[in-house]
Length: 249
Image (cartoon, rainbow, N blue to C red; front, side, top):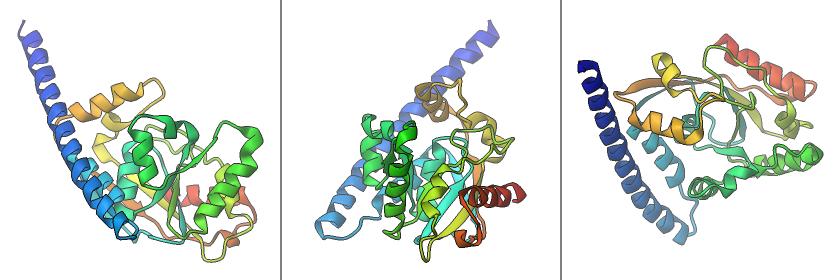
């Protein structure tokens, strides 16, 4: 009976915690949208989408630590992938935009927010359209803003680094003058098991779990030494070099 009461109490507190965090996120979004609109009205590139994403990560309990120097232009970021929170953290610490599958653009609210952060949408499942995907990413890189990819192609458990798929690195062959690759290791520490988004975890269920999670956690983003993709003979070598640097970290 006591255990049942304790579980019910924990569930009630989790619900209150989730509601409070959602309220904070909505309030932050409204303020960020007003500021974003003001910047756009002045004809300036808005810094508010990545600032909003960083704030959401903090609301969800993240104490963010950064090692190394994030490149804020002329780079492709290649990071390990554990959770959708990776997007909040990378954007919030480097101002990067992302490559995402086209289906994300159609998601209510999420697709719209991704568009505000200038996400590059590609048809990831279209094998016949790989050339178009590469051309789209290459064109985005020439705009000089940092662009992030998750070359594992899926989320992992933070215990093992999955093989890096080389397809998206084809955008760097032949090399684009001035564009470097910066590997990034995202480390959630002891909170990794709670925050990992694995294949059997539905998106909405995972979001609820993160919203209800008690306490705070430290997450460290290790921005590693960038390298010139021109030093690699092909896309597979670029992928292997980025993965090796993350594994070594």
